[in-house]
Amino acid sequence: MAKKDAAAEPEVDEHGLKVQKYVSTCLVVVPERDYAETTLRYARSALYNVHVGTRSVSTADEDLIKGELQDEFQVDGTLAGESMDGYSGVIFVGGEGALELAENRDAHRLAREAADADKLVAAWGHAVAILAKAGVVKGRKVTGDPSLRAMVKQAGGKFTGVQVQRDKKLVTAVDDAAGFRFGRELIRIVGI
Image (tube, rainbow, N blue to C red; front, side, top):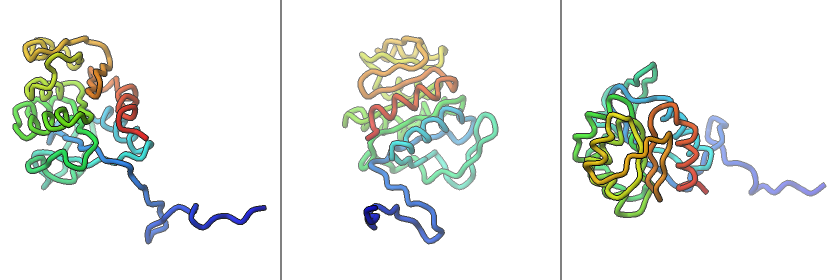
């Protein structure tokens, strides 16, 4: 039997937990309240499984942000001042709270920066309004909450209404029911 190579041993931290090494990181923009938890869980889990980390930001970071159902968590930082430098893409979290982010200039700027750099741009549900207002849906196929159909068309996009729509590195989904398929499309773009 061959001697086990010491270099093959996983790196562990001071608590004995395996240290996860990421090949890249995606920026995740989360509304302060009423965000859609299910697809967020699927997206982060899918990315983690292919060694892509996430950094979560919101308009404020002092308190826990609250989802539509039960989730609460502390984001890593604030949306203001973030740039796409060092990130492989940006994901805008859906839910009713995303409608407030649709008016946020920093959210628009990040969507345009990612699209201009040919990085992943993703959103689901009401967060597709951010993409429409940022001008990144022009000439692209997108889906999202059905209430956004007119907004997407006015912004020059083609609203397909399918559960998950991918147009190059732009990924959109209708709602939380699309979580698994949405996560799968994300890893096809930024995964190893």
